[in-house]
Image (cartoon, rainbow, N blue to C red; front, top):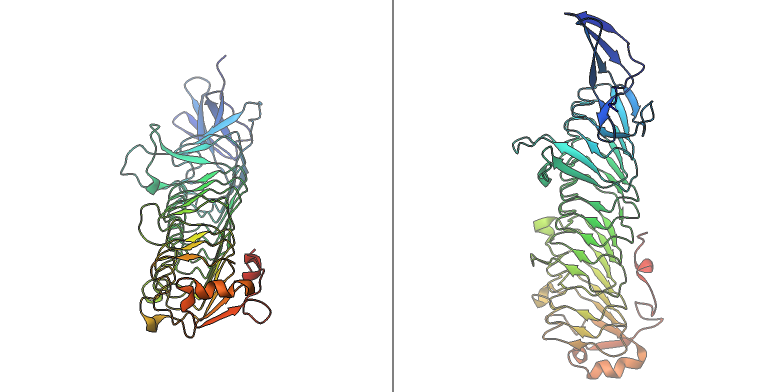
Length: 443
């Protein structure tokens, strides 16, 4: 049976132009779409004789799109231009039933500050023009400040092709401040919030698995602490590049961090939680994760806890870090792990450490070494590669080891070169037992 057009609660005003009646509705208008209906901006009906009647949606204030229209039909889509230039629209809620929002549906909604995209297992598609030269982003010409995103979304052209990540719906937004992701969100798209210059706060849901490449790159006001869920597996390349985040905890669930994924100059403290599996970092070899010069890049990192094996020299050339703590599950430090860390004063090595790679804790030059204390909690001295402690002043740098292992360290290659090898304990600078939660105040 052919569906009729649906409308209700209109007739706020009416005019007649050339046998055409125009009426305005503050309530939503609908037209058939697939197995349901879609929200539209206007509908036209045939009147008596040759007269036609056009009803135009005049949507204002807080608008909650229902899951079903007044006749009980499921609302499945938002039409192209459905809310375009509704300058008095302030809030919009899109229900779980809607799986497609047409091109420029909210273009020019200059007062629209709040978006709620309700939780759903089904993705929603935001449609843009098929022409490559069109660069209008979906929420660009709104006043959007707060967004709740309760599901995954796709960014596609009207011809069905995947759209360029450069035009992601929420990217390059100059008004968005706060984003909360629901538990149904499993991925954050590549470049999803790139260059959102006012974005200050992000809250992740418990179902997040992937943060895409460049997802929050260039969010220069993003200073809040990030709390990743224990479901997160991948942080893409340049995901937070340039964002001024001060503290971060990377959960044990994370399997891979892309190149420059955490190149964050303002990062002061970082915790890589204890884990049994090796963390893959910087798969294209563009450089260590936390390397950098204070003068060149404005680096601020001072403390780090690393609770699992990693595949790269994490801190090579970092000129600001002062303290590194290696957890008990770490069995090997790669070559050049923290070589050239000119301000490193203290490094604590975990009980499980077995091998240390070439020049892993070395200084570039003797006069640049600030290392004052090494605490090795391993009862058996880890096997050292070439020049592990090269240019470290072994006369002044104290080495603390388990009391029962002093003789073993005094006879082990490279460890024996330290003049001051002392037992850990009450008088030592590091207690015999601790966790990263006691090292840092990160929650």
